[in-house]
Image 1 (cartoon, helix red, strand yellow):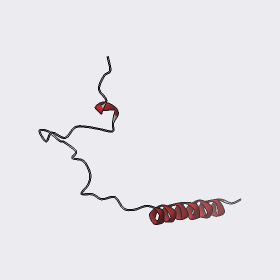
Image 2 (cartoon, rainbow, N blue to C red):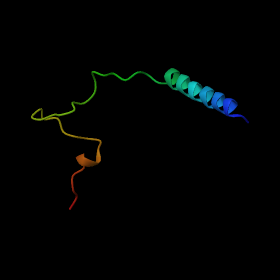
Image 3 (tube, one colour):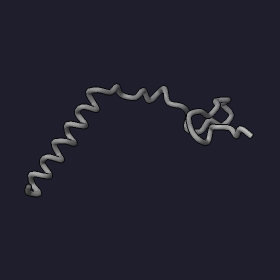
Length: 56
């Protein structure tokens, strides 16, 4: 295989993967995201390792 053929195969794979991802997923709702900094908003952190409380 030549470099040109290998590059063409990789480019076709990347384009196919991106096309599949765009067709299979829905775009994110940018207005439904949690606040980046929630100081004083009474919003509890969740879903991250820093949000888990110690159990001892």
